[in-house]
Length: 228
Image (cartoon, rainbow, N blue to C red):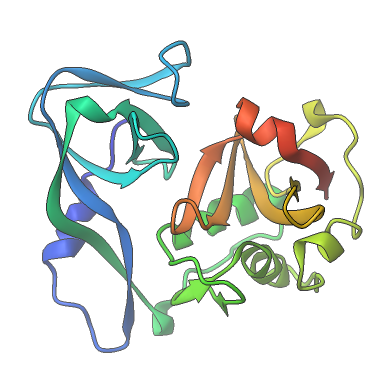
């Protein structure tokens, strides 16, 4: 999977008045040969080998030693922060409300693919707009609404609706994931499974809609429910 660079063209384009601009991240450049990993760990799978001076779209990660790198598939990988220089430019893409992406099928796989149209939409607590700002449960509710399923508003309420999945080996694209929030003592976060171990969510940590690898200690420790 190659790093995302084609969308940098959007950063240099004039934005139509009816379009909403989403920030994908900052422009980065590799300062040395390095690797992009599936998780912030050198023992994880290698997505891509970066050459010196190669441009990247990057975001800060929760680990100060690593930087998140956006790949062309919409998945985020991780590169050692010491090997990547962050440049003072934001990378943006625009989405027109008049030309909203079409959902061509009601299958879970189609819904999972459709969700990637909103990568980079800003995180907003209580937000309900998939273009200007949305939170985790609002994002999942909005996506499921596209296939005629009216979910409750909060992650905790959503986690009680639908067919439970008790064995993660049976997860399918489009399934909903629910995570425990220790501070509030209840389910407080949700996302949608994409397949191949990845999920998409509106993440406060990523400052917007992003993808993450589910099979890491961080996420598996707090994953408490899955629904279809």
